[in-house]
Image 1 (tube, one colour):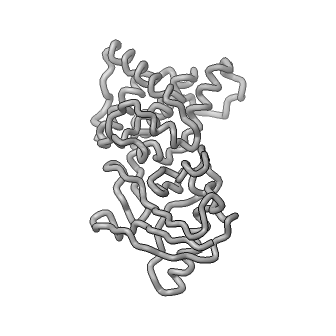
Image 2: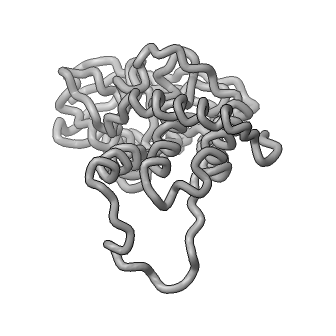
Image 3: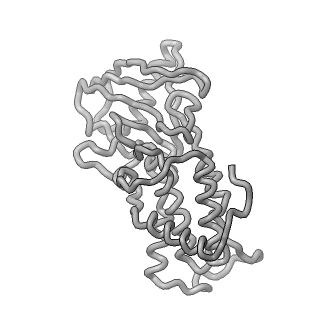
Length: 259
C-alpha cells in the first residue's frame, strides 16, 4: 500500500506545531496502525531525520497509551463501523491504497502536547490520586470469596473498571470533558462493599480535582461513549451525579486543596 500521511509535528509544549507530509510505500494491509508508524520512523531514521514521537506500550488494546486522532476521530474508529478498538488494534486493511491520512495528538487544554503525537495525561493520574482508592487492612491477602458481592454489583464494577484511561473521551468531547473517565473510576468503587468507607468523600474529591485540571463541562452529547474503546456507558455519569447529590446533602466538601 502507498499512503500519504499528514502528521502533527511539535518539538515541545512551548513550540508552535504544524502538519508535515510524508509519503510511505510498502505498507502491509495486515500491519497495525502503529506498525505503519514504525515503518515510517525506520525510513526517517535511515535518512537522518527526526522520527515521529508517539505513545505506545502493550500494543494489545490494554494500556491505552496509543492515543491518536486519525482523520479527526479518536482511535480512528469510524472506518467501516469499526468500534471499540485502540490504535494498536486498528489495521491498515481498513484504509485504501493511496489514501491521505491525517494524524494528530489529543486536543485538550488539560492534555498539553509534549512532543509530536505525545500528550501529557498526568491530569488523569491526579484525579485518581484524589480519591480512587479504598481503605483496607494490611496483612496477608484475603480469600477471594471473603466478601460476598452480588453478581449485579460485581458486573457493574467490572464494566466501570474496564476503562483504560486512554483519554479518547476527552479528545472526542467538544468541551474536552473528563466526566466519562472520572465517573467510571467513581462508579467502580462505589459499587463494591470495599469502596463504601470513602464513597462520598471520594466523589467530591475526584470531581473537585477534575475541575481543577480545567476539563470542560459535560453537555451529554455522547461523543465520549461513541469513541470509547472499552464501551464505557454514559450511565456511569448519571451514577456519579447521583453520588454528588447525596454527598452535597451530607454536607461533604473537598478534603484538600485541589489544583
